[in-house]
Image 1 (cartoon, rainbow, N blue to C red):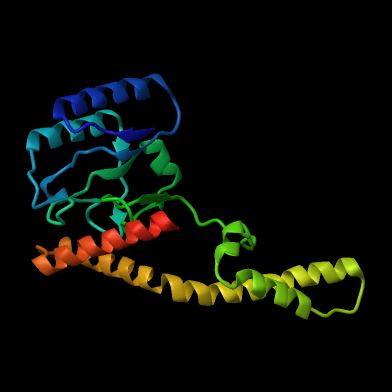
Image 2 (spheres, helix red, strand yellow; image 1 turned 135 degrees about the vertical axis):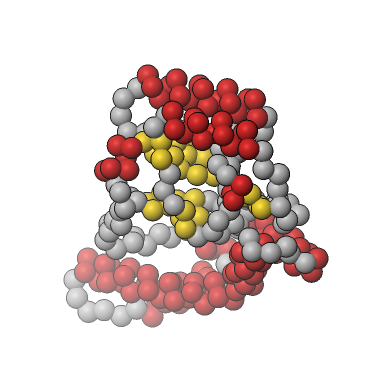
Length: 235
C-alpha cells in the first residue's frame, strides 16, 4: 500500500482507521510505504514541533495493525524544509509480522536527496544478480558534439577477416567498448560539476542533521539545489 498522508492531524487519524479496516479485511503479507507525514517520537524531529498526541495516535495505529519497522540506514531524517533548518522522519516502511519473519535481515536505506526535499528510501530483502548489464544505446547521444563523427570513424577503422555474421557480432561488441570509453570522457567533462554539487549538497544536509546550518551553508545549499534542478531539466 502506497501512502501519502494529509497534513491535517484529524484527517491523518481518519486515514489510520481506514487503512486498519482495509488491512483487517484482507489476508496476506503487508507492506505499507510512503510519506506518513507523522513521526513516532520526539527524536524523529529536529528544530520542528513535536506533538505527542499525534505520535501516540500513529503508534497506536501501528500496534493495532500488527506492523513493525526496520531500522533505517543512510540518515536519521527523510524530510528537510526549504530553509534547511527543520528535519523530520516522515517516510518509512511498515511491514506485517509475517513479512519480517520471512525476511528478518531485510534493510531500509535512505538515499541522498536530489530534486525533492525528501530522501528516497529503499527496502531491500535480498541481493539479486541478473548477470551482465545490457548495453543500452540512446538516440540522444547523437546530439552530443562529435559523437556521430566518432562512431563513423570507428566503424570505418574496423578490420576483420572471417565470416560476415561473426564479423558483425565482433564489430558491434568492439564498437560498444569504444562508445563506452568515449562517453566516459564526455560524462567526466559534462557532469563533473553536477556530481560535485550533488556531493556538496549531501554533505550540507548531513551536517544539518547534527547542527544548525549557518547562513553561508544555507545559501550554498540553495545554489546547489537550483543548479541540480536546472541540470535535470535540461537532461
